[in-house]
Image (tube, rainbow, N blue to C red; front, side, top):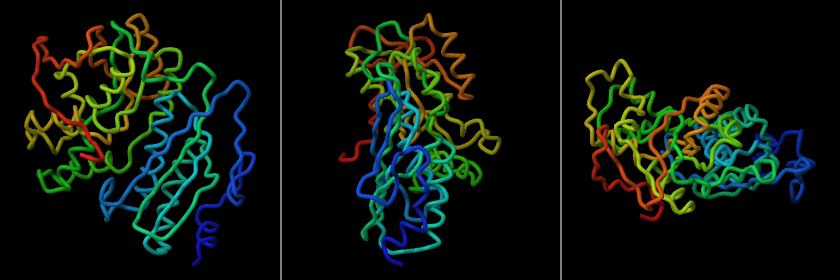
Length: 324
């Protein structure tokens, strides 16, 4: 099978929203009047971002999910995406499963594939996603203000727990590993929550490299500090609640590492004024997404971690860095 046959069979579909889709030198997008384009790119590399034995259907899902998560953090509605795919060889069953996982998630969010590129090489997936947001309403990292509440959606740390087990550093019950691996390989982009938080959240970003590291980006952009209650974040790892994990192998330091610096969570981290707590709760309910208040923004720069009694917790957790 040649390159263009591959594209035609697995990745060409009629354009529904785009003015022009797959098949020309460029795709053409037409945002609605009064809208701005939100654009983000993410790359997944075998051996760096995923294991060689990952299900191709799960990989297709994750490749798009991590990009949709960026749109969610911006409060943007998905429009379209492009796919650049390097393959070591043409493997039709693998391609069929990859395309199935990719396009199922795309259809769920009304985000159509409008172009891209394919080549031979080590397995590498690069997606650029396009969304739209009303001018002036995008959620940014730079809006956090002293006194704002600090929230995170969903659960934290299970993806990192799965990674530790798959690398052989810890042992998990088979059922616990299967559930945690699902969080690692099939993250849920919080698009509906991001849309619901427009006009409510003062700042936002997605948690991809670890809670504390990503919070640091908000603090730097906003010129602020924060206090995080580690006794709350510790309880956000779902694995501890699994029946098969009761009395299981989790020590506190492992849980702190996974929840505070684990990465691959793809939850939304955001801030909002205390006066809007009811609005935050309504946005969470409307989007079907649980959110937890984990701390507050402070005027003094820096990041403080405290326990349930408000006492300082020493930490040296390092979030993921591609070049460390």
